[in-house]
Length: 359
Ligand code: CP
Image (cartoon, rainbow, N blue to C red):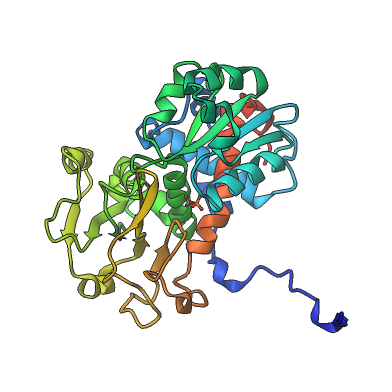
């Protein structure tokens, strides 16, 4: 029997919920002077690691992302005529869809591969040969692969730019850029870099720098803005304390980041301004979960004004009872990633001049 639909129950609410944080993209437009020269350098680069992004390039990307976010209808076709090859060989909700959303919003077209077994790789084709074909079919590649080495193998043959959208336990540079973009939108005063008005923040990272690509990449971008961090506290539950790769901590400290590690979550939470949490790492062809005793919920002793970031997908480590609180900036973080990726794609596809000098 067909059940009759009650039409009064199918309405939905278009308003963006309050849980999307009180972000200030327009404040970034005021705080950062436009300088397209740093962005034009991206036209000849693949994006593999957060190491590639110096301060000025990041600031200009954040400014362009803020332009897109402040006025989303204004710049709708800078990538008209360009084709993105979106190749995701590992599950993804946010990264694939936000890259594709970004590309569509910029007026481009997309070819999407969501399973490597539908390509010649299943017949033993080399990644170098696949890359050679990509040169003929598209203008930019976004790749997520469980193998760290795949992006490097493809780069050997590519004559179009490729973006690392997560390679095993190694890196996820555009996620880290989106994370820092969120932090600056939350507290634009951190951009008063050379004045006495800026108050550094304490950032807690619940996760493993040597296993989680989002954490590894985030620490790198934070190290380029070390002066905004009074301290970065890594909170973990690894009894053997092996949470850094060889030289990883040293490199962060040489860059000026003050890093402390602890296994005590609740003792440290009341001092943290930003709490970043993640529990998943892709190791080989499966994901592993860490930190089962390190969970956040609405009863956690957070500072009243502290924000929580999470690259998502979440598990039990981040309770949904935080979603309706002012600590929830993880949804805003995921939303802002679209604008950050719009900015990056515009520059990598040599369309920067189309969006400069337009407020
Ligand atoms: N943040 C992130 O990488 O999420 P997805 O795995 O859903 O892409």
